[in-house]
Amino acid sequence: MSAGGEGLVLVVDDDPGTRKVARANLTLEGFEVLVASSGAEALARLAESDPLAMVSDLKMPDLDGIALMERVHALRPSLPVVLVTAHATVETAVEAMRKGALHYLTKPLRFDELALVLRHAVAHERARRDVLRLRGELERAAGFEEIVGTAPAMREVFGMVEQVAPADATVLLRGETGTGKELVARAIHRRSPRRDRPFVAVNCTAIPKDLMESEFFGHEKGAFTGAVARRVGRFEQADGSTLFLDEVGDLDLAIQAKLLRVLQEQEITRVGARDPLKVDVRIVAATNRDLEALVHEGRFRDDLFYRLNVIPLRLPPLRERPQDLPALLEHFLRSFAQRYGRTSPVPPPDLLAAARAYPWPGNVRELRNLCERAVLMGWAAVAPIFGAGAGVTPRPDAGAGVPVDTSLPLLEARQRLVERFEREYLTRLLKERRGRIGEVARAAGIAERNLYEKMKAYGLSRDDYR
Image (tube, rainbow, N blue to C red; front, side, top):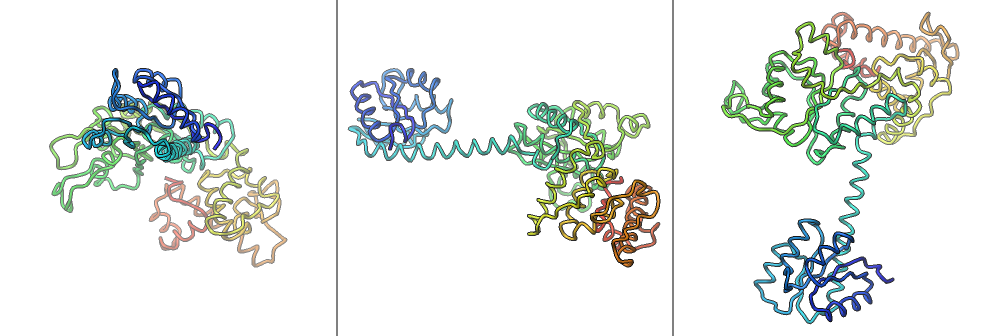
């Protein structure tokens, strides 16, 4: 082993002879050795260097080995410490190990034994630091892996996330459905001091009005009919973490008042309980609604709006960042190809131009769905959505008349035309009925089950039209 190759260790002993012999022997064993004659000097050495382990005499005049170890662990909790003494007893050995010593050796030292102990200690400490380093690298990248984009508007989003994540301020994410609001919320959480606690997400539109209070705040056993056991609500689940309230603009006024109180007091009361519970929760809310208009109409509390709108962050729709389409296509195609064990399909040369001209009402979510469909069914199943055949340049008046792809047999061309019509028809119905499936199915004259199947085939989501 080259000199110092085993790593840097700190040896603390008030006896000059012991320090000299320890340095010589451990250097021969491949360690780089720092020495200190007292606890105070050891602490000074630690302030200016970064040893991977420490060896300390137990009996020293100014600060004994156990007291020094406790001081060291207050600064570096994981640093391995080996204690050495000429006056070994079972009691002192037990106390040393109980207070955090890695090992306990007696004098006269056998340096081959000490070297073996230190090699294990150094290897463990290096592994621990490697894990922390890798975790830090992952956390620095965390949350952005699914948020692809280099457009100026997206760079602004990334910068805002970096800026606001370390604080505990409430963030209000605003943007159309499908722009990636939950991904941004997760990115904020993963880059915050709360990242070690689970991220908790609630879709406010998915919870029935009469269950909202129980869902948010929990309930006690017997609080209402059907409450057969105590339930922990989402705020308690998110204690010490981040709670993401998606589509907060759809909350009922009654629950808005209760949410406001939680934000003000940082405490909740379970349904059926008397005593409040303190909670430490960071709120990231999201909406695709015009909250100012809802406030003006009396459908959203102005005081709650101001509480939520501490840090507003707008997410741009996909049509405002067409330069990101190539990277997004590559990302989603590669991801789905890996998931399904397929080869990533190469987009036809003219499809990108058609995609840039397409308005993307469902934003990135719609693009993601289309890429999944392309991986499973090929580009021929996707291109008609853009007003183009697979590999066929869209006409300048695409959409103004009937798009005809004469490179296909009649039956296949007609089928694609039907698919495009069905998708446009269902898209308009979903917009008109604001995503209410029952109403859309009745208007279309088909069963809800068939409607869901068609929506899945065309990459449509009810959430895009609420």
